[in-house]
Amino acid sequence: MARRVPQAYLDLVEAVGAETANALVAGFRGTRVYVPRADNLTADHDLVRRLGWDRAGRIARAFTGEHLDVPSMSVQSRAALVVELSRTKGMKHAAIALAVGLSQRRVVAILRQNPDTSQGDLFGQ
Image: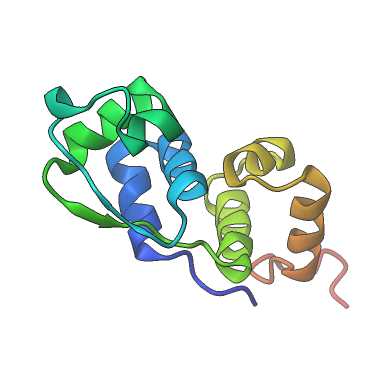
């Protein structure tokens, strides 16, 4: 079974939304990022250059003055996220692929490798 999704990632999603959290992970995977106040962001700040003004502003408003340890989202963690999004959120394969940054084909493969055992056997075998 895939490992759990890192709590640091779940905290990011809760604070700034999945799209911004995924962009932050893609741009700063496994690094520590200082987050200035939103009104101190400039066009040459790494957050703005890599994520754009809107996402950088969201992060700055949520984490002003903090040093964020951006999760690396290992292959196992991304697989766990795929499983979690499918089972707890009921997301479609294409939506999961876009949210996690994997191909839809890879999402389907991960879900096949991690069958949902909470459902009973339809035919009682």
